[in-house]
Picture 1 (tube, rainbow over the protein chains, first blue to last red):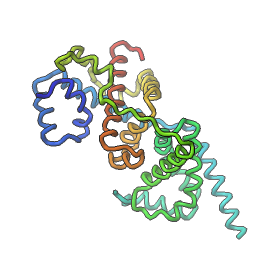
Picture 2 (picture 1 turned 120 degrees about the vertical axis):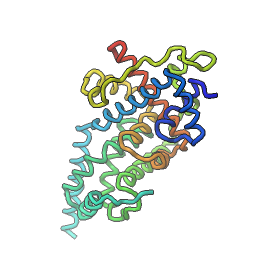
Picture 3 (picture 1 turned 30 degrees about the vertical axis):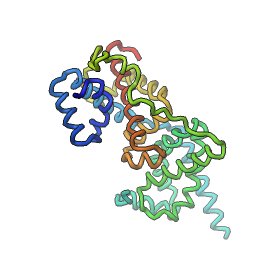
Picture 4 (picture 1 turned 120 degrees about the horizontal axis):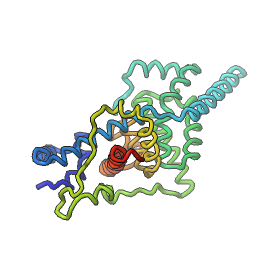
Length: 85
Length: 205
């Protein structure tokens, strides 16, 4: 019988659909009976969505600009080199 | 492994092969954050930034040999990972990994001896993730907690969630087993869950 702590250990696998049929079934059975674990799964899923929304917009603009300039300079140098040969 | 079947990506690659500046500008913008996340799995921030810059310069020539057997993103991430591994090998260092337990101790403490909730989850999400992100204080708090995560957990999380790699790809790029990757992701998510719960309850980070 799956306990709440066991479920918390495999909660990410459940959310990502990485559990086998038997594992998935025992989680679903537990969730039918346990409101706390339903909250936990819901919250962990929401935290994951929040993280996705947060990180997809996170870019270190200054570093990207720096890389962009360096690549542009390398391309220029290559073009000049090609012209000379 | 999925190859390049995205028409926009195919066009971008052929423009890069012809040496067009604008194509590199677009590629740098699109792929640098993910490449940095890969490098940060292995190295400190300043070494990681060096590696990513060097990789871009080598890509200018290497792109000619790119055959599109994998996607461009996966190819770039592999180049970065290989360079990092070489750098670590020459410095005889290894990435410290902690895969001992899939439970965060702070979460584990909330169960009683029989494995039931002693302190149940208190968090209630009534708004969408996008609405929540408009809360600047929460966004700053997430930043703070993300940067406090062990580098290995953060990179795995970034590649999996933000850069939307499949598990197999992340395992290949970071050189970790599938079960270790699951532990890394689960540990990181628990930390974020605990952080958001505290924030919603107390309004403090």
